[in-house]
Amino acid sequence: MKRLPFVAVVLALAGLLPFLLCTCGIVFFASGVPVPNLMMAFVFYGAMSLGFYGAVHWGLALEPAPVIVTTGADHTNRLRLALGVVPAFAGWVAAYTAFAWMPVAGVAILALAVPLLYLLERQGWRTGALPSGYMGLRLIVSAVTECCLLVVLVARLF
Image (tube, rainbow, N blue to C red; front, top):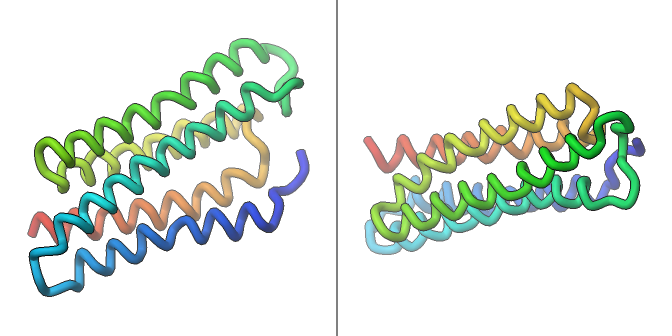
């Protein structure tokens, strides 16, 4: 498998900017008035990001020929399709919970979903179901995202 294109790495890292900016706004902004809007923007972006992470697996499953795995490709593709839907559903649950109940609950759901998805992807990577360069990038993106989620949780709960 070839290495990830440079533009993919740059865009993935740029995709962290909304997390970082919302986190700074939520933590450091003195007034309580715009914080709920920032919290909702933060949760909705997290939900959208989870859906995007899942879409990667749909792309791999729908490729004309298996990327890496040759034996058991049908089973691997079924798992990829499922892993493509579950993060989007978890993101929707987080967004709906934030909207219908309280934003910090949506952040908590995302704080559980992001590392869980990373661990599932890492297991797939170990079996050769994911491109080699993908997990290094996902580690960075997941770590920064999780740090932002945890900082916001601590800032809003205490």
